[in-house]
Image 1: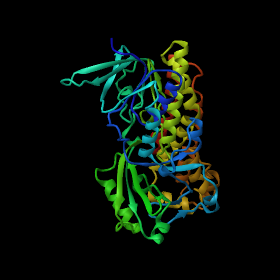
Image 2: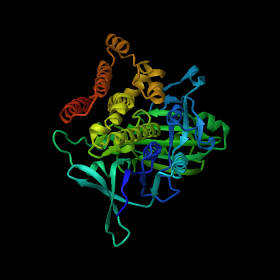
Image 3: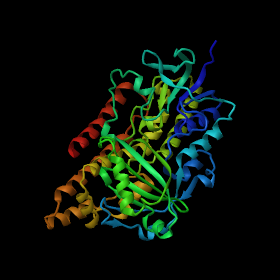
Length: 456
């Protein structure tokens, strides 16, 4: 008789690995499945990660070779003519690491794989969920013989498979729920290069800067290691094909970096929108990029994925002790994540939608007039929280000077939308009941849809 698992996890990224570790620590038998081969930890990327997330998960800091300390960057307008410098904030201790994502995933994989309750299958393609009605009872994988489909059964399946969510996207939505699709404008495509810069003056002059609104998205040049710069661009996926490469090339030209050789290249898709509300279903959970758990202000996904995966694993252990695997039994995970990080990121998403609708001249004006200040940029970037824009003061000045009141009104509306959606997220029902949850979800989607129409 085929082996049945307590937990099957689709995807061995940060969310999947954190979930496997927490579930195995609770005595559950875990099957971790990934389509990549062993030793291939995924796309080459770097990320800003809070130090305390490793303590909260009971991990020590990753080896020093994987990260460097973070200082606040200088924020620039798209044309780099206006800037906001962190000043004395730059010298304050910053509770973050600038970390090599792929190497950190490999480090975490090496910690999780030896656990006696964890079985790992790499180079295995998950085709979708095995369903009994709308209940997930396992996964279907590509078989080894003649392309046949094999089925692996599990009490709970965790979809940590990334943006395309091979489990959740294939589960039918029944009343009272409705689909909550990730729109093309909510997905960013990013490319980056690690460049070897052997000139100290160039390194000092070009490193640690972020360009807000560059190409309709953002760009960065962060010091990666001694004599190395991480330079990259992220723009909405709706941009013309090939345009992002021109944006990266143009950025390097303007900064005088084109003559230095790249030693690594990377890229990928980033779901930049608010966290999805449907994190628990019949027999399954969703975490990581599949749940859009990412900081919309900086594209950081490691910390949210680690926290969400850990919470999901703990919820599965708790549900197993009570003998349930439906959303009511697993509800502790959505409730904990959404009332905390999920709510904060939802507010940032409203600001992200607003900023995507601004022109380069709008952003330059906001910088020059002091409507945007360093705390407004540092708080989302570092703390993942809604910025304290001085919109009212700026609006009064603009009206007196008859200068761009419409722009400030747009920003003020975005702040109101951000507060409204944060409040709505934190109002998640304490216990699961389908009709109550559906009303809660519909309220959130109504706020998000109205905000999108205002900015379009």
